[in-house]
Length: 332
Image 1 (cartoon, one colour):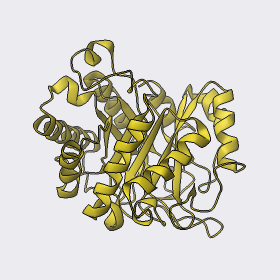
Image 2: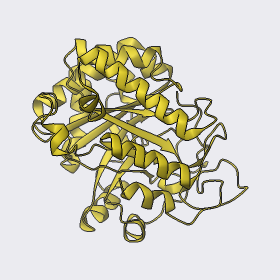
Image 3: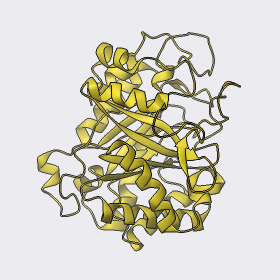
């Protein structure tokens, strides 16, 4: 689903993508309804908007936390720094970087993070790691660097999402990660149509079942998909995902919702679809009411008002207060 992303400044690596989000606790009632939700692995963060330290005039995480009440962030993006080696934007090291410093600040303020691995652009780990074991090893480096509770694989574009060899490599790698890290949550984030997953998304879900990948959360990105009414289209896309999870895994409605997330785009999308603060609040309330376990948006960097500003990296293109979308997301 995801489209071209916002253009990175010349000072940063060319990369940009949608987002995706973080894992989250299902209610005890939902978690007790199925053996598929086990060991508290969904008890991570519920609302986790994207924060990108290599782009879009990144704000102070502690300032945003204080102003909005948000506790979790999805940190973008882990890529390949050459071969099967993970790095932020493919260039900033896992330790000693602005990203690592920001993670420490978030944790010191009582929060936590989920890294987003992949995205729309850049040199990704999936195609560069030659085997599932090697790819799992790259993921493990990220997990070890930050003692993570969850990882998000943002699987997009022709090199990963539409490349079925790489799809299977990612799924098998995540299976290994789950085996080696009891209690960790694994998240897949991918594009969608207005009625639910596209052909690559349907296959991804089917293969997750066939390979026994034990994925905790399937998150769709309902934007850049020809949306006209972003609330209605997001709900319809989410219901399509729910129905696919039910038919594939044999889950009930409640259990399917408890394995689902939404990752939107605040303000103007790349295709100039408009998600207003009121619409985002409606989406949040729908997702919360249905028992979804994750809510994210692209991105905190853009969570500042600039009516008429267009699709840019540092603001939403609409009239809004600073951190307004983050504050709504914190109520998830």
